[in-house]
Length: 454
Image (cartoon, rainbow, N blue to C red; front, side, top):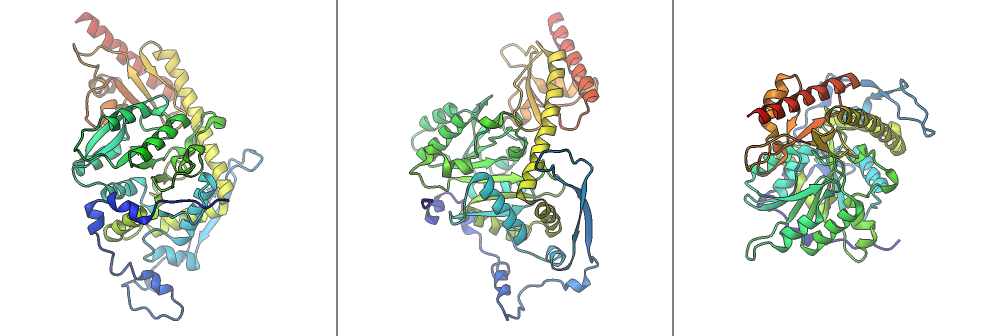
């Protein structure tokens, strides 16, 4: 295998924010790795004595993943236990980047799934969910007032993060094929002379929240080419990667894989992608475990923030996650995720069938290929010269009829009115779906009737 050419560490100096450059290493945590030196007696850290901890072991049961032949093993459980050195490490202050066994397992996962080998100047760090890591990445890469390229509509949870940094959010259009490379190119090529260009593109390539759209291979290639042409970093936020239920023969690779292995990347050094994964949608949301993978200098800058903000992700939940993942192995984990995606595919199909029966002609939608949401446009009249406002309908009439969804304005960086709505199908039974969609139908018909009578 040919040696991989990667961007040098000096390349990232122009991408780090002033706050990241000014951040000083933790005087204690920077020395913690030295405690592993054989024969060393450490007087360094104020760690509590573990003999004072009341916990002696943790035992839990978990469902086994499907077998290799795909047979249903529903109900089969495995019993796992944390004790001894594993529990001691989980209960004590630990490494900023995460418990070493979990970090090692996740790095092996990234290597197998995305084809990235060691020695390519990439690193991995665990955080308290992807949201924690996204916040730290934005602070590491953006100065107050900086422009940032954001696919739109966008995950509502990042808009407040950009607002807190007073960033100028430059919206890049999306459609059923994901982020629009034409929109991105138009923005970059018409950028005002003399104005500092954006350094970062934020995108959700699989099951984009809220639209459910998955970016096609052609779009990804064009976006990656534009990132090289205009010297951008790609922040690949991918919590729905393992919930893909589209045509697997056409499943596009991640940007993290593409910058290394795609034919279009030949001759280009790797190191423009900072990737965010999460176990929230596939194992447990409450465990709050996400992980970031990407250029070592950027991950290191995020770790320095963690060292002063919350020291480390929670050790006990990391140990529980590792015990489960290690018992499954990577192949077992991937079988589990395929089972989860099949579960949500069935949920999607039930919801879409209800939309066809009750809302055809009253809304417009495109079926998602990943994720937990439908993004649809209410075909209702708006005020003269303005787009219809789904927020006023959802928050009043729909709520009064006993159904609630999220108005699309929550996903638009500038908060403009829109006729779009995001509806989550992840929790509802078929009976609840049927009733919810009927109530939406009644709501839209009432709004249309009132408009016609006005």
